[in-house]
Length: 529
Image 1 (cartoon, rainbow, N blue to C red):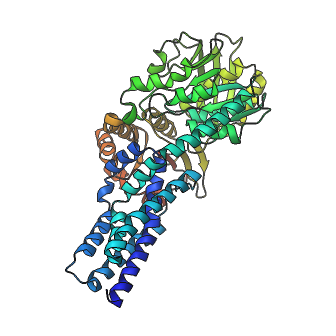
Image 2: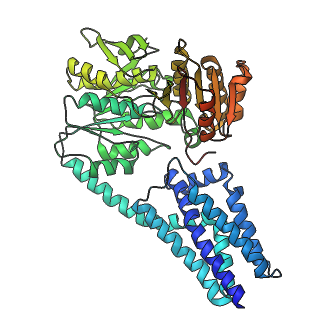
Image 3: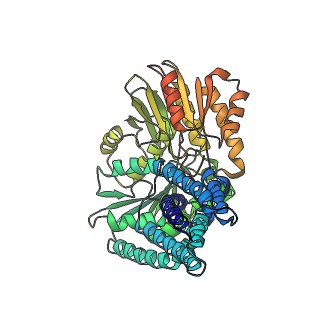
């Protein structure tokens, strides 16, 4: 190998290693967003058509340029270096909605990925020379998911051992607090908001801790117990999420809840659950885990909650829109620019409980009712409940309302949209007729399996019925939403399609006026285009 070829080969190796840092980081970010589960990552990889992404195709081209032995390195290697530098620069500048969180687990996977890379690239170089190692490095950029998945498999026994250790520590902490009241909350949607509302109310009367953010997996609950639960706490509120059967049962077996709230059973995560019957069965794993002296608070507005019989514990059912068979119901609901007033009526209440809140929307009223029932059952005085409800702040990205400089009102419902929640959000927007234009910005809904297109088509119909202007973001659900909008004959010059939220924001700045109301409905994660 002459000096020029040697220098060019070294430059290729350096460019490949620099590019590899960002490529591996992005791969890891996507694995993290898919709960470190290889099967979910592979599903995303297929749906996102990641194998034909521009960066991977360029790496494939670079690899074949290097292995074409008849073409001199002095002609091909500069092109390879330019390709690698372009991708490095692009990935380094890219901003993500949910960037990689550098946890200890991520660091372990990252280390194994680099060790595998070193073994795969260095060994051929020992026998066949530096050019072969350089070509292998470039090839690994093309097939980097294989390195990621292999590293995850290799570390599986290690992660299992670590998780079991943390599980046992959390179980020991709970065992040391026998008087702790554990309340589990689950549902296809509404569980995070209900958790926050219940925490605010119970904190008026008890020392209370809840799982923070969206810490609703077994590992999230374990981390909360180990890092946040205090020895003097009287109540522990545990949000329980699930993407497949058995997820909630696993959490319940750890925390042993004595009370439960099921906020909804609906079309959510159907890609993994397949049927709404499986969703119902999984959500009710929480109720099935309750002891005989426990109680369940169930939202009868959802058919797959209302039709599920409960025989192991006392079931207190509530409703807003379908109160016929409910034990508690919200009545006299009135919305204004200042919030909502409503009453809770129930068989066990001597008189209706009148409440006022800054929150808006039927979904928020429903979530408040579920939280209030639990508070009443635990003995929180009515005056404390009234005060707490009046002081509850809007949960970020869940129908929260704010006014921004320039005079527009923003309704932020960007978190985890679903068919029922999107309908309610559009109805809230539809009620606000007396001000400026009603504008909705949305990429639609995800993880609905075979119902995906139909649900987004119906969503398009809700948009046309309740909004004056629609801005559809991204390609993932665009056709289905536009089909629904066209069925209701929304004027075409009021319907826009943009590729990114940045473009949608720029468009809003051009068409928005003081007094307009803007609803952000859902915000797809980085795993969707």
